[in-house]
Length: 267
Image (cartoon, rainbow, N blue to C red; front, top):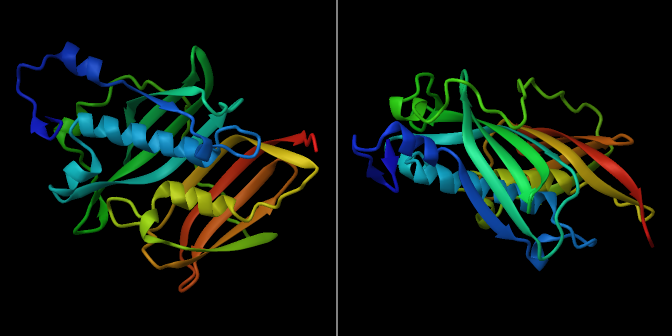
């Protein structure tokens, strides 16, 4: 396996490797990351998760930029987030993350989200290791990737990742164009930009404030620079179904399900 772009030597023992398998990152909530109630937005929180995962993968020698040199990359297939009271502007968020389990055909990475000693959320994610030439999943993981996952799963949020339901009859839509700044290292629409686009059609009710409680996303296709996209949603009392499609061919890029706590507005 690699560390910081360099091959680890055999002098790295099991204890050292084990100590590397959980990473901690801290983020100060900025004014441009909060909503009108001065609380961290779900989109900004997803950016924290993405950054934490990427930094830890790089430390372990298996980040996207490192794997691309070998003709491989990671594709995020599923994300499941559960949260309570989101942090406020100026608070410090701690993200703990680790490789949780190696499944078939995906690798699972989990997260704990904290402010001080208070855990305000947990998350799990499933990733496919892709052959960038054949454009299909690699079923047999390299040994160095297998070595990063415990024999006994360590899960923050157990999830069998059942398929999310299709959205048949949307009640709101919104248009979105994939910009250069929305792309990731693979040249595809960043998964956080995908989530932000899917949230855009949510109706605004001045008498009711929504607080996100959970989000499940299934990423199904690749968006590219300049793609014209349509976000669709159907809202129930506390649950919303989401869909993001490419307008040119109707290709589904992602579908999602979110659950919300409804709170009376103080206005």
